[in-house]
Image (cartoon, rainbow, N blue to C red; front, top):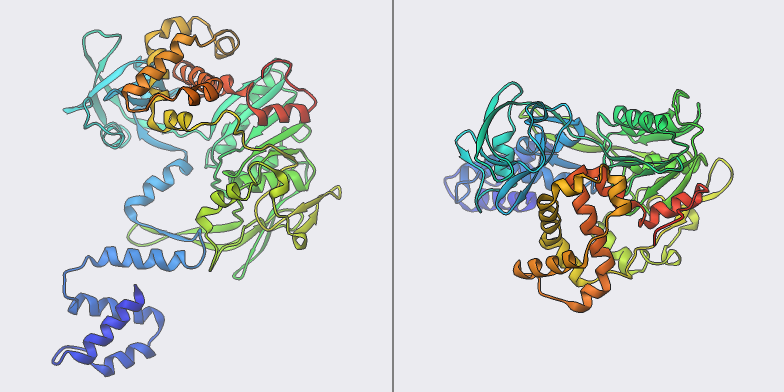
Amino acid sequence: MLGVAVAAGYFLGSHLAGTQGGPSAFLELRRSTPAAKLQQVLDLIDRQYVDTIQEGKLVDEVLQNMLQDLDPHSYYISAADLRAAEEPLEGSFMGIGVEFSLQHDTIVVIATIEGGPSEALGIRPGDRLISADSIALTGPEVTNDLVMKTLRGPAGTKVDVGVVRGGGAPFHVTITRGPIPINSIAATLIDTDGTGYIKLTRFARTTLDEFRKATATLADQGMKRLVLDLRGNGGGYLNAAIGICDELLPKGSEIVYTEGRASPRQDYKADGNGSLTGMPLALLIDEGSASASEIVAGAVQDNDRGTIIGRRSFGKGLVQEQINLRDNSAIRLTTARYYTPSGRSIQRPYGKGIDYEDDLQERYLHGELLNIDSIHLDSSEAYRTKNGRVVYGGGGIMPDIFVPTDTAEGSAYLTRLFFSGALNRYAFDMADRHRKQFADYGSAERFAARYTVPRAALNGLVKEAAAAGVADDPQGLQRSATMITLRLKAGIARNIWGDNGYYRVLLDSDRFYRQAREALGHPLLTGP
């Protein structure tokens, strides 16, 4: 874009008589500094380009392209996008405090946030939110974006919400908006033998406090060993990862160090104040585990502190610093690389000739997700852990125990059920129709152990999915029946008990979790 702009400026200056800037102006432009050159080009476009242009938008595109040419993780964030990008890492936003789902063109409350404004006013799971002030929240035109715009707002402001409960007459409640946490931990569970499980989804400002609270709860329940699930966790704040490692590693253990051309080496070591330094530990990772997740996994692996289970992680070892600009936009600029305690850089290759974005597809095509022997390990990137085990850098964290992708029950029909939303909608409908019956189980644990999805429910799902455009596929259904039934049961549990219920149903059939328990010396006694 910049090259085209320079060429356009030269053409205009050289060939248009009577206009500002001729050949001499172009020569001056060539001799100027890069920053001045860019400004001169923008001025030329503003004065002489054939059509009206939005200069702000043009500058945003130039900045984005320029930063993306540096590396895959340096980028520009417009002022409009910055707030939305920061919310998950800041750990909270302002709103009414409900988890909702858009079902059949209606906003349905899945759960209320503990301590939030809606919980205090008695809003319940299953309630329909039909309006916010004068804006209707029903009908095909309702979107998640509309719901966010109407129910979120500054702290202390009020919104009049129309509610329908149990098919009764509508009523209204006035809810005062307040701070709503965005939790980093999706599930905190414990098995009867004392195996604790924590599902960590991001590394945010509140992550360490959440983690300490979760582990304290598990300790009170008799936790004897911990499985920390970092699958799909794309990272976040470096300090949050350091804090988690402080909880897990003995005093003085190296966690990570960072270093860059203009950033002197900085070492991070465990402070010894953690409550879990002697707890038997397993970490679950996969190709979606990146950045801060890899810091934690690398520190645990290099210090021989626990067992890493799963598949090779994403491979992001670049440190970004956010620099806020005057117009409330920002850039996130790579300023250093981080290295695991053994000295590994886990950043996978990028640059000319490398399709960085299609790495996951390449892993699949090369068979890496199915067979550990298909993973290329660079012998020039060999390092040793604290106890002398060989580990490899140059592209993610390799697990100690490999778990291949399960293709045995996969089918195109299962994929269509997932991505069409038919499976989630049917799980919601079942939970909504029989909410009291399911709640009578008393807990997600009892539900997971005792409830069996009837064949009639599976047939009902097939029928409703067909009505929604997912064509019948008897062979696909037969191949994937066990997985579909499990996901349907987990979806019901999520609608009754939240994410804890969802993960409770899935765990006993989770091959990663089973391998973790075996590594910790406590394999499951039941389940497939």
